[in-house]
Length: 114
Length: 117
Image (cartoon, rainbow over all chains, first blue to last red; front, side, top):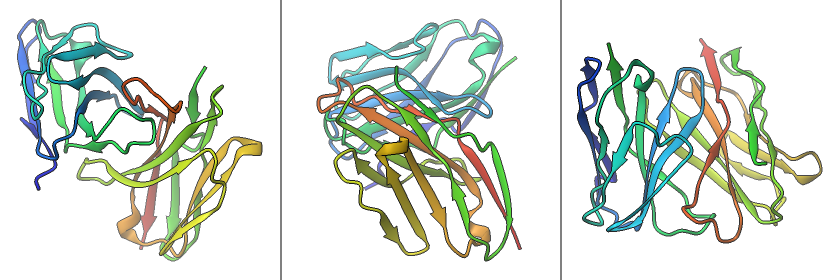
């Protein structure tokens, strides 16, 4: 079991460029999440998905898009990169929707927008 | 409104000292869950513990212990006889409601613990 995997580990983007952050989980979890972590701060929820074909906005969705075509994959798309999107991005998954479910995190993607 | 506060931004201790990381939360729900995660220098987030609002028993796991007090809305984490490998950022998080659409986690700002040899 690899758990939650993310690619790439690190990326530098120029302002206005686009990219997709990949996230895959092999635990057959229904729920998946994208968070961003800014320096000295906790994680903030960008988007989440309750299953294939269903996504919803979190606390900070502006500038991002997501899709979920399969249970395993939950890519995060940045269309027009801005310096404010410099952050570390974490993907997570949980078995179900209940509040007590533990979320398991991937290793993170460090993104620098210059 | 829901909120998690970790007032200690950074803590530095010498190996073998005991250290307590504070976590204070705010919620209007009577059913909620509290979590602690560890983020070592390598960057990943490692789940440590989950506690529900109906269980105020303290928990001990090796050198780690957690003290949950609803009266003060606190869920503090103590490391006994700290070791260099404990150096990390520790996050406290809250998940509200019996049925939490999306299972959203609200994180505190994190406490960076540095254990020196």
